[in-house]
Image 1 (tube, helix red, strand yellow):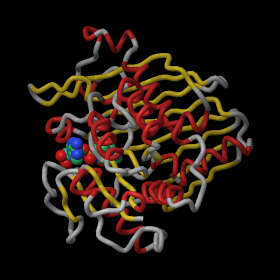
Image 2: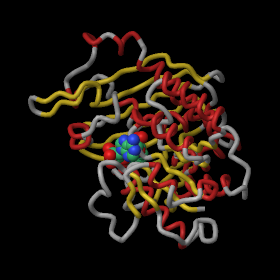
Image 3: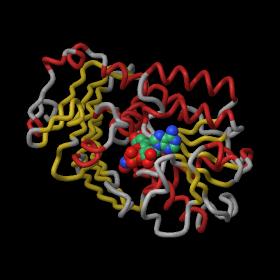
Image 4: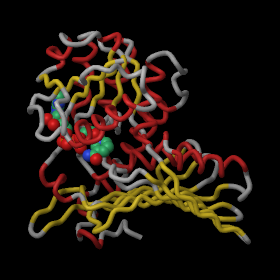
Length: 345
Ligand SMILES: NC(=O)c1ccc[n+]([C@@H]2O[C@H](COP(=O)([O-])OP(=O)(O)OC[C@H]3O[C@@H](n4cnc5c(N)ncnc54)[C@H](O)[C@@H]3O)[C@@H](O)[C@H]2O)c1
């Protein structure tokens, strides 16, 4: 399979290209073609790819002249607000195997259009969900199912990082709900099953006299049908990076830390219960695993992973429900005090 990476920004050039190059020489050898990756971005080829790749094109039409769509995986790494035109263009030029960055859509209108397009054009869509492919998540799922800590009671996730530069210079993510929460929400649904939103919060990003509406942070509380409660909180004005998940069981607690950046792909897990304290650190190349799973499914070497696409659809719907909560819709009640935002608890 050859690769076409559409959108050569932080995700396309900074994450997908290096992971594809690495996979080609390791676990993906023989599956990923030993041929130059094609990139597509009307804004230009970007600046620092660290090698001669990719072959740059300005449109999907140009890229289609260089590739056989049947033997190509297209990676849609454009901002969430630019999914529908890119997928329409890919379908028009015969591309069917598509990896789409999270979130699958920016709102439910786009989501319905994408689902229609998928059905009418026969697109095979795999949504990038590194946390679902992650080794840490696999271990957490095992803890939920093996029952040694009793029943799962609650899930809470903290996703903190400073995101000033990107929020001040790009417009592709309409709110803080669209930045980090798609990762943790997918995991919460995998661990505890279907859920409804019971409350949500959102804060502005404040830097000096500049204010970016709804980009400072977001939080949501969920009630799962099985009774588990989930609290997700993303602070985009934090001075430090952290991606921590805590699972509280009847008889113990599991605390996991996902890798916080592409420079060190190790995760950690601590399990504590009466008379038990386990701490493990392990490699967790979750984006690599996620892309490899997609290529294997597209090449027919494995079945499509059942449920993952439906989970991505549920994530978009629940994030839309959170954004539509009365407390979020009412601008006057937005918390606008930067780091002291009330969603940080
Ligand atoms: N930034 C991250 O660390 C990160 C990590 C994981 C996932 N993501 C996801 O990846 C997606 C992209 O985010 P990003 O941070 O890379 O954005 P970005 O702004 O850095 O890059 C987006 C690129 O897409 C290009 N683009 C826009 N419209 C296009 C079109 N129609 N055709 C081709 N190219 C087009 C832009 O010119 C830009 O270069 C988002 O959905 C985001 O949630 C980002």
